Length: 453
Image (cartoon, rainbow, N blue to C red; front, side):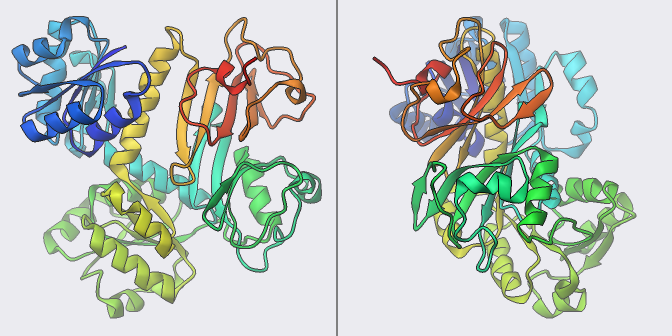
């Protein structure tokens, strides 16, 4: 596909990194010459220096033959204008990043009147991600597949867990839950396990299950944190605003702390069911006075990474509440993982992943069959969802007889509105959605899961 990406910030750069190896012709536009040059040097892309809302700049980037234009600059207005001109200048789909809540409330009008294919809001996307984590407070991460019928969850096995010393082949029968553990991190090694693998405390596992089965599994392994009622948020950011609306709608009590009086007054008007507290969230005495020790989840959502990290470090010593930390800079990830600061939320990385999934879905309609792809276990493994096409070599053969490559596991099959975790006797059929987990990078087609020759 021919793709134009306008804006080479964190979202644009992540998009280029993800899509440049998938046989697309990509052009990038940015007004900063050094960033454009860096993109062109590091990836197989055409770099254009200029304003993405300029007709001449879009022509230079190849708008006449573009399939998709993605506008992800820091300006909502520039993004919208860019997509409007792109629609007039070419015959392409347009995707725009919009952050201002005022514009986002008018999303239906914007899409219909401007002909925009997709509108994305990083803060709203992050809020939905956090709300999903509130459903599974024991999980470090939650990803959805198969139209939401299958979820992949990341979980660290604590000391004294019922899973410690358990063989994978016995878990389903022992707990009477339909779950499959598909990846294990142990001592910094990543393992795609077989049925004979034995779990140990401190293992970090990824497992797949239906939403109800996941909750049941957590309950049966002794995790009591299956329902959150009280949440404390520090930082009155856009993410916090969207999240408060979602949590209140779910019946969760929310306290929100922000140090700016004007922002507190604004949020009090917008969120009448939220207790908004004016104060410095870095003031530990204030947090304790407001009931930190009693909340079931604590969310560090200020606009400053360092504040969020220091808050999380303090809170993890004071309470065993579910901890969520927002970080903008993805390059902090390696350091943060060692600190064990609960669930990490990278809003702009999440947005880039949504965009990548959209592009892959469009590519799926013209030949590829990757429906979804998530990087898991800190990017060392991938979870891919394939849409099985007619005449695929995997159709009709029992899974146990398929010549599957090493370090790959078939995790789930979605068929006729139902999701299942397959056994060796199950077969894959045309039109199935099949999720696999693998450490092998660069799979583009379901046939790539098979050994050659």
